[in-house]
Image (tube, rainbow, N blue to C red):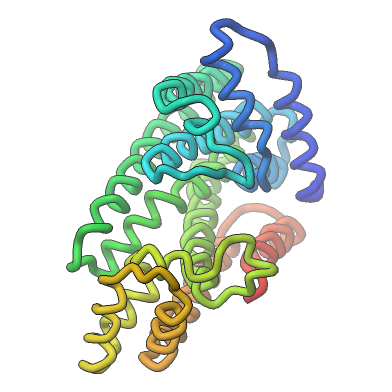
Length: 324
């Protein structure tokens, strides 16, 4: 097994080896641009790690890992258009650097390019990868639509919110791990268990992201703290606060999530106070812990040695160990 840093280096090197100058330049240059912006590349790392967990050479999993990375970045290009976001990883978004039409078309091309990486595998592995990928890609689109729909709804339930983050975020984490298992040609049971491990870890990670958005340390979180509150996003924290709050707190919270003041500092402070006093903060932290433990429970049933189970557990603990 290799370290996370080594896997990231392997992915970067393989990505570099795939670059070629192609025409039309305005289709392919945005693809190269978004991929070169980097990031932690956690999803393709999981594909390589999962392949090695099941005793395959990580090199065999590189095409599948890159398919995951290309697809993820395709979704980011289109998300940025939908959000009218000016920056991605501290750089101009594709639609800002070029234009919206170019970003849409380059994103479309990335989805097709992602599929092409599966052509490097034999027929059975290709079929299983493509089936999983198609299912996952459609779920990610469904999750994004749920997220858009929820912006204008006042009746979103906890279960509906969990389904949204499962589709928008967690399924791709699970699929990334299962792809490594498919490439390694392990048993169907092992492949499904590693998917469940990734899925539950992805849910825990997204709930933690919600929590840190409100209560994270600005120096370590990497994003603006309170961003979800400013945008009136109905996160798990908000939904639990609505569920638990007394009538006065609920009325205040509904009011705060209906306004957009020029200075948001007072709004953020008031909302966080209600999150704490209502018990929403504690409930969210418990949900994070529950999903993390659920992920670790699946490790018991995977047919690998204990040393590899410890590596997966350690990875999960490190992923969930972000500073608040």
